[in-house]
Image (cartoon, rainbow, N blue to C red):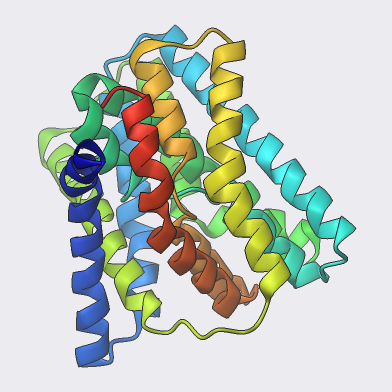
Length: 303
C-alpha cells in the first residue's frame, strides 16, 4: 500500500494539482473555457505536434512501429465503442460522443508527465509519439466523428482543412524526411508555444470541470468509462505482448492506453455541439477515477 501511495504522490498528484488550479480559477473568476480551448486547438497543439515530430531522436523503425501500434489500438477501441453504442441504440450524437471519449485518451497533458515521472526520458520519447498519433487522430478522425453528430461526412472531412494541426503534421513529416530545421527564432517560438500546450490543457481541464452537470446518461457513461479505464489498458497489455513489444516502448504504450478521456474531446464536443455536457462529464469521471487504475498499473510495469 505504501508503494502505491508513493507512486500516486510522485506521478499523479502533480497532474491533479495543476488541474485543480484551473478548477478553482474557473470557479473564482467565472472564466469562459471556450477562448482558452480555441487558443490550444489553433496555436499550442499544432506547435506541440510539429515540435515533437521534428525533435524526436528515435529511429525511423521505432517511430513507425510505435505509431502503427497506437493507431491499431485506437481503431480497435473505436470499433468496440461503435458496436456497443449500436447495440444499446444510442442516437447519432450520443454515439459520436461515446466513440470520441473512448478512443481518445489524455496522452498529452496527463500521459506525458506521468510517463516521464514514472519511467524517464527513454519512455517519454515513445509516449510523445503516441501523443502525436492521438493528436493526429483527434484532429482528423476525431473531428469527423464529432461533427458527424450534426454534419455530413463530406462536411466533416472538409472541416479538417481549417485545423492548423493538420498542416503541422504534414509540415512536420516533410521536415523530418528532408532533415530540414527551422531558423532559430522560429524554432524557439514554436518550441515555447508547444511547451505551453500541456500545462494550459490541464488548466483548461480544471476550468471545464466547473461546468459539469449530471445529465443522467448512465448507460453511455458506463460504456465510455469502462472502455477507457478498464478495457483499454487490458487491450494494450494483450496487444503489446502479442506484437512482442517490450522495454520503454511497452511501458509507454500501456501507460498511455490507461489514461482518462482526452481534454481534446471536450474541445471537439464544444466546437461541434456533440453532447458537450456528457463529454465533459466523462472526462471528469475518468480523470477522478484514473488514479485507481493507473497507480497499480505503474506498479505492474515496474515504475
